[in-house]
Image (cartoon, rainbow, N blue to C red; front, side, top):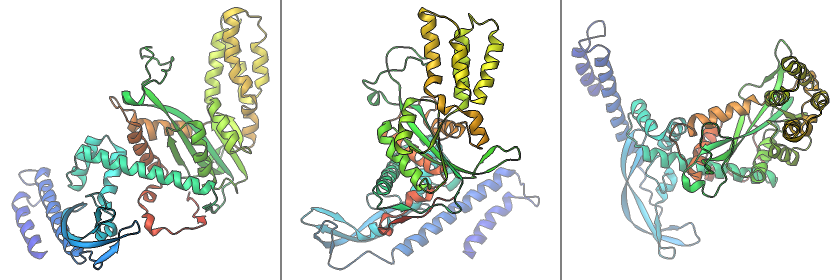
Length: 463
């Protein structure tokens, strides 16, 4: 180390003057910094190789093959593991099962590199950048920040595969919670209110993924050619509330949001949301609330999994529908602006019956009556979900901004960029990584399954 330090110091001296600038300015210092990093990575890789060489993985002449048979020792075979310190070459004992006709290295299993040449630490770094940025820029980001060369294809394959594995883990955990073989502990301290906000958004897909799917007819700026271009992703955001601000408005508990995203149908998505709500303490918290934009599938899902929850239509969507209703009646209303203002006041008070009565004062026929009735249907079917005055008195959130922001930040900013087209498995993988990251549950993805023992309790989710 001393010799290396002297060598690098000798290279640094002519490049940097007394003020730390030198002929090359900042670039000269940067070059030396990068040279030191490369040298330290090389040294670290050498040390790691020596450390791994201390155990060649020989476990006797025969070992269990994992399928009820015995595999015999064949030889010591070389392999290369790509790590956060660069590639490391090592030899390990190789065993072969004549019954199963496949081989394996116990040392690979111990190191967590079965079926891959990437170390767990490097996979974790790749997953992080792959979830954050498009695959090619993500590879360059690894090069710039860590001095590692990883091409776009490897970033894609690794991040998507690990995300799919994480999705399978989440589904398995949800099934265990539903079967009550895994019982979540109540959070401590126990929050006052648990919210589940649900929404959906489209993700652009490859042509093979949207074959025979009907197109939406209300796509502004897109041709109405009958072709689908997206598949809907359903997103749930679960969060808690325990406090209020100085003006008495509810305040979301800091870092309490957890996210779930899936291409599943509403019926398939419901059990995942139910398990997440239970994991977050739904069976112990005093008040449960479901927030949504008014889509029928959301309320059907909520009624099925959280029948005791208060259902609230997002007030901003309700206002949009009220503006649309006012526009429909503008041709017959004496003062459209005043009419809309009065109705907005009634909406804020939760007096939906007054809105319906005011809209039905006018004797319309034909297409105008149909348009009016269609606009009113939203309010008539969601009347009990729009008692905003009462909800404010109770100190409840009446907007679904958390999940809508999630649709933009968790999904849109990564999966809906210009030119992107996804396969369903690939998008599921990246969606899962981003949800885990946004939920502050990133470390759970790499929890080794073989280090987990069957249990009847799950640790509570932190705030």
